[in-house]
Image (tube, rainbow over the protein chains, first blue to last red):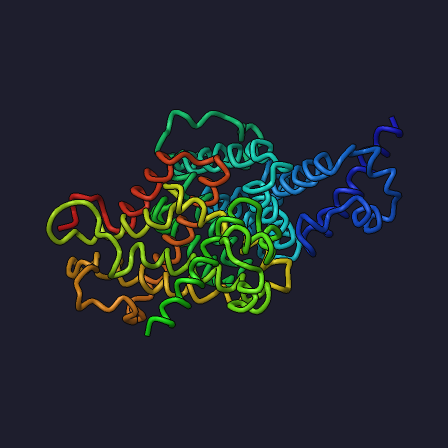
Length: 219
Length: 219
């Protein structure tokens, strides 16, 4: 189905352009004109694929979230080190993937901050459309924490179901909320420049020490 | 000096209005016209006090930060309970004061989120002007953590210097960064609606348990 592939590529080309425009100039900058010019396509094509600005913004947000999920999901890059990584290493990689430590992730974090602020005051960006991703992340991190505590399973096991219900461990869910809140706060601090990269990584390390015991204690 | 007092009141009247305008419509909404109308004063008066939009925004941001500092500073309301509160209670109150758990704090948190997003893409809001507050907060929380661990001093002791250097305890500084990152992340989650009030308070409690030991262990 070559035509379908073309559609997906075209949409991706436009949302990639939209992300760059928002990262540079905020959500207000993402007009159809600016995004079409950045993507090198016509305004009419942007309208064809996304209908209105709301549709374009929702697709832009979704593209950022899907890329983030891809960074630490089953298809993501495993953390450095040969063989099956220890659960602690998997968690460090998951949290590290959430922090804006390279240009791409920094740009994405700026885009997400713009969406967050806009959703609080702008009826055009409905907050309920932005809610799916955080919930899925809590499930993922809770499952990794539960696995790390059980001292079994690496989280990169192909049979491991990242959508599995960690509901049996409410403490893991609460700890997952803590991990994700810390990652979101560190992201804010890194972007604003009042937290250094070194401090952010040390804080993550310290939090995982508190939650899982010192590194030597993990298998 | 009645004239000076008038000036301060007038500036306050205008920054209060500016905060309401930004909380409703984001930073773009904070035009001189809109802020003057909200404050019930002339555009000329806003110009007289703040010069340009940059000056108005900087003053607006400072007013939010000063109110936040007042909520848990030496002049702030002590946590509930008679007598000198335990260090753990002081820390709970400090972190609680940072979370958007009432209408005023929610409005302020929306204003701060708008500033954060704008500073990342808009040259008119210089990020270095927004940096003083987070640094002062780290010092304050680090000092409270060190006091709580020492099992001495309540942090509300009038002789206690909240600006005192907790640099002798680098672990307390790192833990303070963690506490503040978690509070910032929980604030984001509360505003966006993907963290409930109950979860936020449970996460704070759990974090303080991890940092200070369970509640019963504190004096």
